[in-house]
Amino acid sequence: MDNALGTTTYAEQWTTEVYSFPIPTLLMKRIGKGLGIRNLPRSLPLVENKKQFIELLQSHSNSVRILSIFKQREQHLLPIENEPKDKCDKRVGVTVEISHLASPEDVSTLSIEHSCIDMVMAAIPIIMRDVDKQAYRSMIFMNYLQVVKIWGLGKKIFD
Image (cartoon, rainbow, N blue to C red):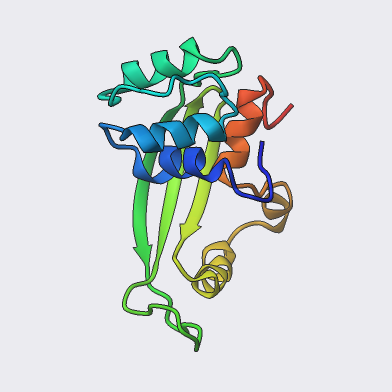
């Protein structure tokens, strides 16, 4: 689905970051294009809610699949004492999110978030210092979109 031109970034960015209604017509056309839907009508209504969004996508494509994901999460701010000496925003630490996904697969996740990769890299040894080496080696490292794509194909992460 991804390509060098970043066509899918509109759909991925909206689903992971923006998620607000109503969806403007131009953005809806970009999402449709990103999902490979070629037969969207020229004039689209303003998409006011989740139900209308799903119905519009499914009425114009057989390939659109809806996944129900049940996620409980907690977020914490982790200060980084020996912050990287570059252009990172050092006013705050990194956001650490601990999540449990019960559906479509039972998965526990740990994510580290910051706009600067050096801050994320500095947080990893702090978070992992007391983790058993065997447990660390059995971890799978992937981003949320990779997980959703696996589930979208009807597969499981731990199969």
